[in-house]
Image (cartoon, rainbow, N blue to C red; front, side):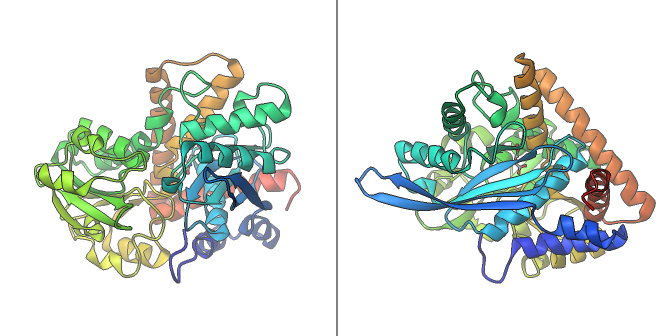
Length: 428
Ligand code: GLU
């Protein structure tokens, strides 16, 4: 998303450069990993309900597929930029690598605001996206999935278009499909739950019981809602949640000292995670400015919205009590803010580790589609927990051994694996 003066791709490259130096990577490896392998920019004409044709701009960026087919979501956002998609594709490469699944990194996007599109227009947009790319994506080279403001229904329309063009059934073309249509049980919960598996492990290392902790969460979409659900089940208390208000075009934070009631909030939330502020107020929530989520006196901050939220300016508002920042969103913390959090001794669980539960479950979805045999929810979530927990401890151990910030340790593990795959393939 475009925010003045902030470029997500420059940030992703700066993070990579830092780790390339730590790893003393050769020039050829740096060259291949600093840029996407390929990218597609295209127009998607849609016959709108009013009879006019509107042309939307779409993207797919394939950052690296040395370890397996590209993998990554598609975002629908009015402020989408190709540089954001480039950064997100690069982060997908590191995400799949850090949890050690045999996939590369891609990302897609469309500049649009789905709030203003009818279901029919959204269907045509999804089908149009696939028509532009059908030759360049697919189960064996690049596999899309949901992301910001895209849903299982969008994935199913895309699958249907791909199968119509290909003349055969390819359930592995896309993940995050509805359950019963090739989707995996647990996929909806996976990203949010994955964030909490890593928080649970971090708290264990700190000898802190979850039931003694308080958290504040930014965003109230899919990642946030399921992170809150599992964190509350572990006994933690969420005292503040922020969400975007489409009508006012700004965000608000909803605070309640006794803790938010997830189901009650879900009942007054639209399908894009927007909470109805009048209703929240009447339910006893204090309605604050959107940024207020960051300055709460809590132990854990969970940014689960968009990039560039904890930056040079906002990091100053983070309370001294905060022990853990668990990044549910992609790219929520800038390198300047990272340096300050590191100095303060805050334990940052970096995005491409903390939110890797989604893509890990997508990988399980592909595995189940290939077998044409689907696991029970419990089995899927247990496998997810095992994978996330072992990736978390691998990163933690390295951070401890080499005295690295958690983000750098995660990068060292992820980049090393991808660099090795490039070298083994004689790409670098
Ligand atoms: N969009 C999610 C992410 O950023 C999931 C990607 C996927 O399942 O491929 O990790």
